[in-house]
Image (cartoon, rainbow, N blue to C red; front, side):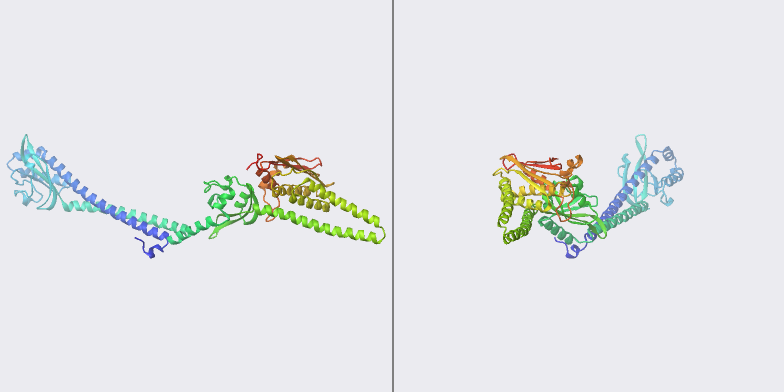
Amino acid sequence: MPRPRLLRDRPVARQVLVLQVGTVLLLVVVGILMASYDARRDSRSRATQRAVAVAQTVADSPTVREALRTADPTALLQPWTEEVRRDTDTDFVVVMGLDRTRYTHTDPQQIGRPFVGDLGEAPEGEVFTQQYTGTLGPSVRSVVPVEEGDRVVALVSVGITVSDIDRGLRRDVTVVVLCGLLVLLLGLTGAWLLGRRLHRVTHGMGEQELARMYEYYSAVLHSVREGLLLLDGDGRVQLVNDEARRLLALPDDVVGRPVEELDLAPGLVAAARAPTAEADDLYLAGERMLVVSSAPARWEGRDVGSVVTLRDHTELRSVTGELEVVRRLTESLRSQNHESANRLHTVVSLIEMGRAQDAVDFATSELQVAQLLTDRVVGAVDDPVVAALLLGKSAEAAERGIDLAITGTVPEHIGIPPRDLVTVVGNLVDNAFDAVAEADPRQVEVAFDGDAATLRVRVGDSGAGLDEEAAARVLDRGWTTKAASGSGRGLGLALVVQTARRHGGAVDVGASALGGAAFTVTLHPPGEGSGP
């Protein structure tokens, strides 16, 4: 049966508190009732046992037998039985004959009168107990035979009134009730403390609010196309969605593990643990280029961890690289357009001066230089995209005063996508240009060689080169070092390494014959032992 709406709308903490209070009350009341019942039963049982024990002791006493042999047993037994009664805290000790005549009684007026109550099988030598209402009121009594040899010569009855039993029972029940109230107080205090904590943890929300929040959270978490990673204050993963698992190749048991143990790029780990917000930083994770944003998570002024969002920009980065090639080629063509205009003015001026032969020689030499450069690049590279890249780099080198040499050829039908070749050649040449910016002379060499199963691209420069420590770590730098925010710089070598691995190759760092560093990239086309 559904619960009333009023109860469902109450905060979960209050519902739990009410349930706990009700449970504690029920348990304490039931416990008190059961303890009282047990105490009552035990008190009756103890009273019966005590009456039997006292009666047997009196019946076995030599004093009773000696008094029974006299003409007046009462004279000797009455004071003695009263003393026994007081010492044993019983209400009556009656010694009687087989004919029920009392020899002793608490009330002396009852002496000589018949005993009131059942005797059971006591006259036959058995012990008999019962609860009976006699001259002193309701009592628990026992009747025990006095035996002399094999004969029963008299009977002893010892009783404890129910009122006395109830007085002891009330004392016992009072103790039970006090203990129950103490337990109730402790239980209510514990329930209140637990309710306070639960109210703080659930922020005072009701069950419908929590259910709705969880449903929406689960739907949003698994439907967004951005990776989401939530860390607690100790850097442990507390929440991760499907996209984040895919982008970072996270294991199934990632929740609860420190982010440092997930084999992520140290730069990405540092960004996730950073105390300040960082937006749109580029990192490499496996074969993916990720745009990462992180921010501390706060609740009511307290730091509760951090939130990391991830976006996959691998394809966008590759397309951006190609657009960069086109942009640089366009700039180169624009520059050459201005240069061509200047040269055309020179030719026109020579003709106007009547020096036609000098004009022809000047124009022909410029055309030969441009044609030789184009023929050399096109002859080395069959692919128009890569050829355009190298033509643009040649024009850029000329503008920056760099001597760019291109040797060797790319084997025909190598099977490596032009986009990957642009990534490798473009980034290596850009790094080489930067390396020779302060050098003298400024020389860069690009060499291609290989066969149908392998392509090697070697780029050397005349820069300062790399020492042993830098050479050992340069390929890791792009992998571990954060790029400038939003710029993509600092990731060139990492992209080259990523491309080489994707094609089952490698990147080697060495010294160039020009005096600087040399990077050799080995690529294998698909189906020729390439990696994943």
